[in-house]
Length: 484
Image (cartoon, rainbow, N blue to C red):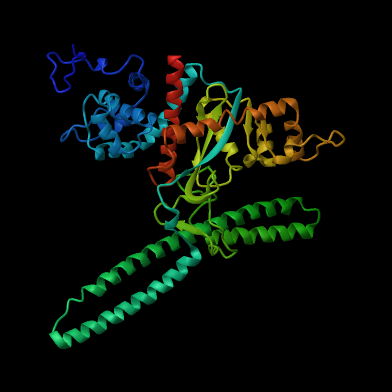
């Protein structure tokens, strides 16, 4: 007797329509996302949609679109095309969309139009985590990771090469124009008329490239002037202090004169801006400026990327050079909740620490009790800032900080005091906890969810995209805590 099987008829229609709740198991992430979106304040998105003309094609429900994006980001689907494809092929995405399938351009447009509001959900999610008891600021670890920009490093060009290529292209364009004129003249004499299609097409390509190089060169020169002006203002501040504190009258007069000249030169280099030399969308965070000569001209190796000018070439963790941004995260020890996530294009980490901690205070209304960070964050200024704000900080000062303490000497400098602090039993124990607090978070984002490159371009857009990534990281932590 032949063995029989369970009935299977995948193309058979249902006699009664099934409930969407039967598609997914109890406690699925999709149910959780829908419940969370019901708790979020989406008025910033609603107000934009309600301000539009009610006539014409109806918009998709913003709750559905937000739910779809949050779930997609949680499971590592970031492309608008892949998100829409999943509404057909993935049961959870089809359930969340209510069996609706917006065109990928609608998804991309929704994300683009409401990016500020979507990035702002980070704060709401952190506050939900706090209400659930997942946010404890006894110990917060800080670290940064380089995330690739949506641009190739091969699309960057140095200032020196811009000048060389510009001169070369100008000569080639002049030669092509002369050749075109000669061909036109010769063919006019032979045939009476000529359209000269081949050479003008070649000429058009060169003229387009020359225009792009000139534009990038001008922008790089403007950044270099701004950087030099900023440096001159810093020097002027120092000399103005010396003008009142120097021990002799001659030194005070000399310092005052130097400060006046520096202020005047800074104004000449950047007359249309005030003392805030950061870009409009980055008023406080560190921002990378090209190195400039005393005259305010970019140094020969200063670079600018044609695809994403805000991104910079940095060294990744693997040691390779890539076009990236520097994404920061402050993470709680017990639950690995990200409580601050600033981002900029300045490669060194040491300038970020005050801004990261200030964001923690802004999001939660209080500062962490203890903070750990690797030696990339070390500076006497950072240590003093934490001390002034009553934050117990543990920052590695380098490999030497692990050497046995010299009990015969008394620490004098800020670096020696921090080194001695890290050599104590409590200091070693606290710093040891840093690596299993913050470093796994970047692994979860990059390896588990596959987020290794930004989709958007431009510093402000990339910042908001990073906030969406961190918000969905926290949602996953909240989901798993609720299911435990």
